[in-house]
Amino acid sequence: MTNPDKKFGNRNSNFELLRIVAMLMIVIGHLYKFWDNSAVSQEKGIIYPWFLTNQGVDIFILISGIFGINVSIKKYVSLWLTIVYYGFICAVILWLCLDKPISILLTMPLREGLVIPSHLWFVSTYFALMVFSPLINTLFTKSKVTQFYYCILFLGVDVVFQTRTPLFYGLTTWGGSLLHFIALYVLGRIVFLWKIKMPLILVIGVYLISVVLGFFMWDNALYSGKDTSIWIILPSLCLIFICKDTKSFYNRLINHIAQASFGVYCFHALLISLISIIINPILSQIFMRMGNAGVTLISCGISILIYLITLPVDSLRRWINNMIESYLLRIIDSVNIRITKIIS
Image (tube, rainbow, N blue to C red; front, side, top):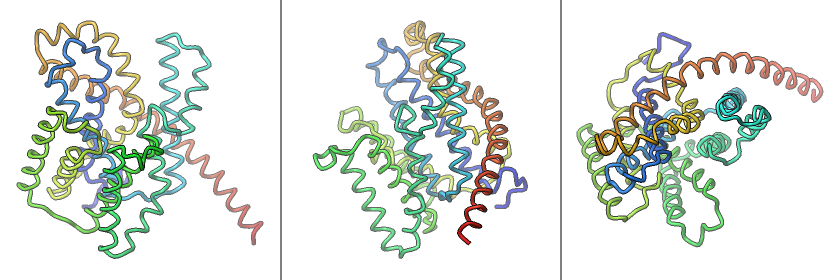
């Protein structure tokens, strides 16, 4: 498929739409963690949406595997500027709305800019995945047998780590997340490079069966519902197959909205905190009148609202990033030229 608009590159809107859905899944899941839902916390209807939303993170990394990560200085700079930008925006809101000290306007962007494991664990882990991606990509120059062995190895070690066996007690949770990201990235690359195809009916059937079994396993406390569970990876992979094997299309609006997905992740926690101040006092009343379906419906609506709020903020971010990136890249190019002259 050739994209007529070079501004957005050759983006498959199938996957861009899935990226939007995955981000909404993550926001909905985090909404349940912020709600003061003591009156409904024991209801299975509240647990099930949280179970489904765990697929969001795995979908993002599988998509990265499908398209691959081609690292460049520009990509590192762009990611870092995005993190610092949203750190500053959040700091301004906290200063204006929650009476935080003005020093937060400096400390918060600096803290986020360090890209260390923090509450934005996905950001720091994905940044690390980008760092290791050139090494990981060398794997795909080897034979398919070797690629398959490495894929099984990464997935196997990932599963063993998540069982928290004594062998891995020394690794941090962040290290486990990075290991999981690498395993999913390798799996996504193999699905794409090997051109694996599955009948659509079979994929939909596997998705439904895996979700039903996941509900059963969760309901009977047979697993903890981590992102690394096979009951999360399998349905996420099914959604990837559905997008990959259905007819591709290009939609400029969908691709534009999907560009803000990373910004939504950086921004949504603060927005959820502010919205929860309004919603929490009436959440139990909503549950009593509308039940779990009402709480779920409100969560879906708020997640869409958060995405819409982020869109103009992210448009400003892209404009600022383009200016700063061009300036920084000119400096880097100048330094490289000087170093080359000195060496020669």
